[in-house]
Amino acid sequence: MAEPLVDRFQRPLRDLRISVTDRCNFRCTYCMPKEVFGANYAFMERSELLSFEEITRLARIFRGLGVEKVRLTGGEPTLRRDLDILVRMLAEIPGLDLTLTTNGSTLESQAAPLAAAGLKRITVSLDSLDDEVFGKMNDVEFKVARVLAGIEAASAAGLRPVKLNCVVKRSVNLGGVLDLAAHFRGTGHVMRFIEFMDVGNTNGWRMDEVVPSRELIAKIGAAWPIEPVDANYPGEVAERWRFKDGAGEIGFISSVTQAFCRTCNRARLSANGRLFTCLFGVHGTDLRGPARAGVSDAQLAEVVSNAWRARDDRYSELRTAQTAGLPKIEMSFIGG
Ligand code: SAM
Ligand code: SF4
Ligand code: SF4
Image (cartoon, rainbow, N blue to C red; front, side, top):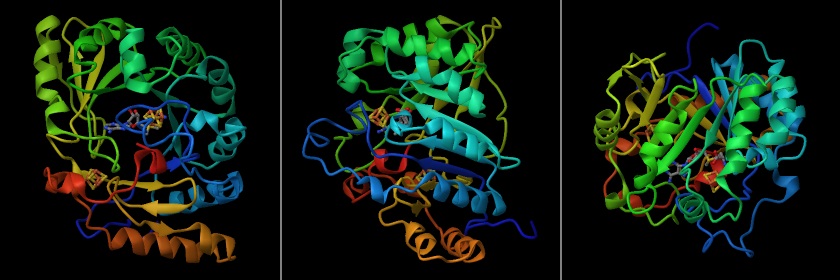
C-alpha cells in the first residue's frame, strides 16, 4: 500500500468490527434493556442484512486500506445462521487477524466448527459467576455454567487464550469482581473489566454506576499483587496487568475515565452495511447502497477512505453528563 490511510488526527485505520446481526438472546441492562428491546422492537429484516458475500467483499476492501484485524460482533453474532461459513470466507483473506465476541450462550456446540473454519481467537462476555447476578445483568434464565462450558469448549478447540469481558456496574456486579479474577487466574485466559459506558440512548447510564479501573486495580491488587505490562501494539484499548506470582494476565478497559480516542484506529460496520467511525456516531456512511448498485471495489474503497479521512471523532474525550444525552447509535447495532 502506498500511503497509510489516516484521519484528521493522523490515526490509521487498522481495526474493523463487523456486526453480523442486531439481534440478541440476552437483554443486558447496559446494552439492550428489555424495557426498550421488547417484543415490539423493530429489528432489521433479513433483506437489510449484508450477505456473507457482501461482508467478505467489504472486508477485502478494508484489508486493502490497511485493516489488520476484523472482529465479528453484534448483537449476538452466533445467532447469525451458518456463521462458520462466513468465518471460512473471511479466513481466506491474507493477513487478516480474525476474531469474534460472543455472550458464550451457544459456544459449547459452536466453538469447534468456528475454530475449524479458521477463527483464531475469541472474546466471551461474562459479567458474573453468580447465577442471580448474571441473570440481573442480562435477563436470561439459564445458568452461568452454560457460558463456562462454552469457554471450555473454545479453549479445547484451540481458541486460546480466551479473553473474558465483564462490564462492571457498581450497584449490580462489583461484588463479584474478585470471584471472576480468582476463577480465571492461572488458567491462561485473560479476564478484562470494562467501565460501563453511555453507549446508545437507552441504557440509563449514570456516572455513579461506573467503577473506575483504578478502583478495580486497587481492589484486585490488594488480593493478589499485580504489575502493569507494556501494550502489545499502539492503540490497544485494554490496559494489561499481570499477577506478580506468575498466575497470568488481567486487563482493564477504561473507556470512561481514561479515554483512548487519541489512538483510536477502529471502524465499525453495522449489519445493514453502514460504516461508523466512532462508537458514538449517529449517521454512518452507507456502503450497502453503492455495493448493491454495482459500484467497483475501487469506488467503494474511495467512499471508505473519504469517510476515514474526514473523521475527527473523540467523543470519549469530550464526554460529560450532558453529552450522554445526545443521540447515538445503539451498541447492539454496531457492536461493542
Ligand atoms: N453479544 C456479544 C457479547 O455480548 O459479547 C457481542 C456484542 S456486545 C455489544 C460487545 C461487547 O460490548 C460486550 O463485551 C459487552 O459487554 C460490551 N458492552 C455492551 N454494552 C456496553 C456498555 N454500555 N458499556 C461497556 N461495554 C459494553
Ligand atoms: Fe446481547 Fe452482547 Fe448486548 Fe448483552 S452485550 S445485550 S449479549 S449484544
Ligand atoms: Fe474511538 Fe469514538 Fe471511542 Fe473515542 S469515543 S475511542 S473516537 S470509538
